[in-house]
Length: 238
Image (cartoon, rainbow, N blue to C red; front, side, top):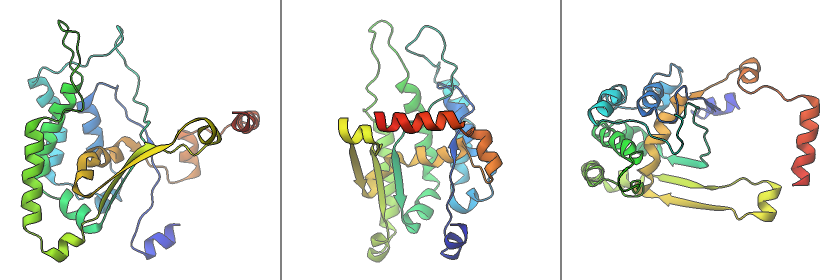
């Protein structure tokens, strides 16, 4: 589809989630997220340099907060994160290019890093974890002020060009799910869908982007004839 996409002014890429850090390394994930050297990313991601600076200095911020990764198991978890996110983010050109290029994202990301750190805190005396659904007041205020200022500078016609959607849900679409499980998805439209945009921005840098069959085979080894036959059988058996 490369030719068709380029003729239409678009781009289509397939990436493999491949973080190089453990599950508690917030700063490492952010750093990897902005270090990707894929040539096409500059065309897609119009991230303000101040936001990149916050990502690169996340380690110092977390140190100032006294952040220490904690896990539900006694032994430190050193495994790489496994992505099980069934989500999509859609944005029109005006919404994506203008919104993501704004410098206000730097302050928002700074508070978001603190929010991520707080999610992993554990009160040993009370034996309680924080409510991960409770968004910090300062973070909400920054987002509200940013969007109010941005929208205040748009005409009615320009506001009509803002299209934003976020979908999150379970969409396995396999035989077992169709027969035994319920499939569900929630769609958020408008500016509230920006709740997921930071994760989508940094996810691209956490991926490998194969361009050839050889690169693909290195990331995802082709199954043997026997494994393929067994998988076909299990698919229908379930």
